[in-house]
Length: 349
Image (cartoon, rainbow, N blue to C red; front, top):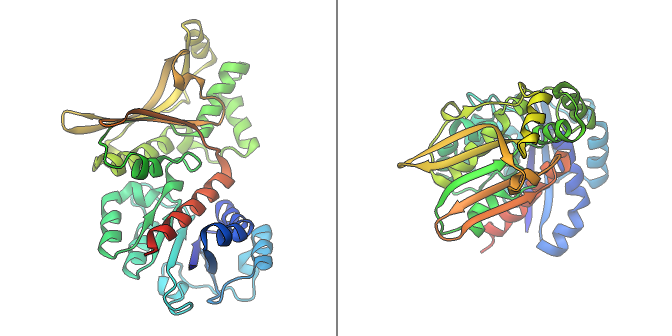
């Protein structure tokens, strides 16, 4: 099966996706019978369209340099003119997939939300690592995909290396999820571990995560609990039909936690974690994020450094807990590749 890709976003994640795509091209053909043809790369300033596809060597060079605008074929057109960037006829009936590796406003979901809605109308399948459109209008985007008979994949928006949404949709199919609880952000978990194990201050631990590349230079979404809230919100809407918005989530971050707090909790036999929860209560779903002092004997207390964990409670299967899943660029890019493989499987007769 041939699949045409239009990649939106050529920052760190977008370039890593290109590298992973090239590295895995042989495996995709031999193991999954998938030939991926990257036909366009689009940034906020414009992009390049290559209906026949980019060669592997050129892709690796572009990913290494990151200077797309200097390419002789670069066109300065609005990235929101999808018809310009998505080749229609190359490959005959070849499925077309938009991979969104951009950032958007969490309140409005824009510009990503309108772009993905238009992609549905054009019959393009969607793989999004961009949380904002899902946070702003999850139900609307799911409905648009259904109405236009296209696939909508977003495992990279819900903890990337930890296969949360795939577990919900496949392994827990038929079960009612009554609660979701998770340590969903690698940056905050590393900070809290370093404060606990090494006695670092919050500021020193935060600076280390930035220096390591674990966190972006703009860390507010992580430490304020917003990133965790977005992930739990998307999972709750997907698994529990919560119908909630980000404004419905009670959010507290970790910036006010001190070494004295850490020491006090340790004396009490507890470790602090930033935990996101979604619980079905009296016909509603309550979602909240905040620091939790967890007894050392609890499984979540053993989730250390940049690891993540999630626990689903269901009516048929009881509790299911998963831990691990690498963070960082490769895991994010890998989640998009995973979605691509699963998307291809869904399209096969």
